[in-house]
Length: 193
Image 1 (cartoon, rainbow, N blue to C red):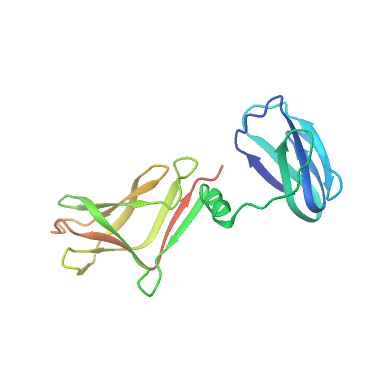
Image 2 (cartoon, rainbow, N blue to C red):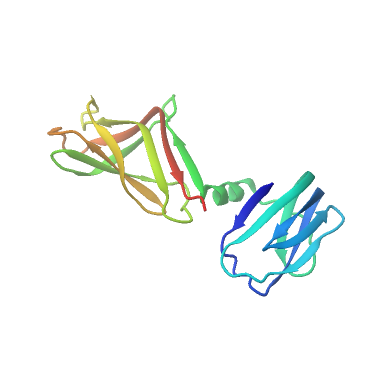
């Protein structure tokens, strides 16, 4: 079975129609059974507030399941790729350090005797404050010399950025230092339901 949570759509008492571009499917939406195919849709009046679960229990070559307001199914119209990508990135984003000049540098905005702090901004604002993990980070001095011996943690996050803190006792760095996501480095940002 495939299950998708529809994030608080505010549909209590609203009529929705479920349809498919091709194939067939059976399942439940808001706990109510439905069967759809390329030639048949199902209309349901939603009786729930908050998140709603759409669960497919059986599907055959299903393409483009669609849930829309009202009693009538309309023709399927795919979203532009960029819009679909941005909507997906509200839930998860992986930022990779790459070869060939693709490394990501963030200027340190605050330096103390033992810490260097930098903020990495996300490509897309997340749906909620995410959990995050980082690996493959480096610290560079303002003289562009790579530093060693630092440990890294995500010290804070919001729906549009994470703060990374690099720690090393008495590091001696000054303004102009940067934290770099190096080749092979990864920042994972997860805002799943």
